[in-house]
Image (cartoon, rainbow, N blue to C red; front, side, top):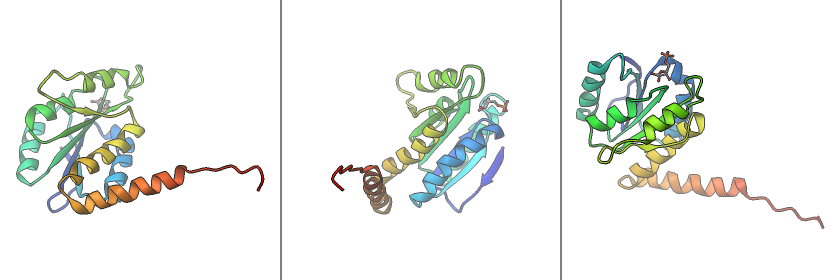
Length: 169
Ligand code: RP5
């Protein structure tokens, strides 16, 4: 297990399957930071380090983690395994790990059997960002400060998208 960052008691634990996934996950970290959400990230492969993954989830829950984000490419079992190990919400980010462009990971992450839900976002960097935004909306249900930042972000996003073209000007 490689701990990338460790806070006192993070709200969100981000786990990815390989160090090669980290450049995409930085997009998620930036979004979580923008909402003031504490997080830590670890590289723990569901395939290569199954025991370490089980131990980490138990430890993270005991430390007060409220939500898990799992990201992996290829046969991406990591988010599903996370959902099997915790009752906390799990967001899954499928990554483009090879010749199938991430469609392999998307199917693996989104097609969880009933009763073991993984909230699956888009492939790659768009999904990594949305994992952060979705985490914020979930946490906003019980955290007024995050709820306020979600509202602010939505207003800023709406203003940024606004465009009026006046041919008379
Ligand atoms: C997955 O296999 C990882 O999440 C990564 O996206 C992909 C390739 O891993 P490496 O071969 O770069 O370690 O488990």
